[in-house]
Length: 64
Image (tube, rainbow, N blue to C red; front, side, top):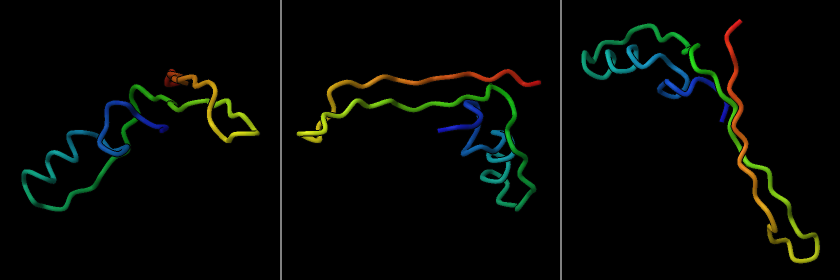
């Protein structure tokens, strides 16, 4: 996953909550705080096709 960790599918939390509570369409704004890249790195045995090692990847980005 990439994007803002403090968001609702990449949107500002307040926009998503307002839309759900008020039931009125409103403009969504992209969340731009606490940006992160998360994923995994797998090492796979070519003979068996099974993973032999897994590493977690988490990188935070500062807003410029």
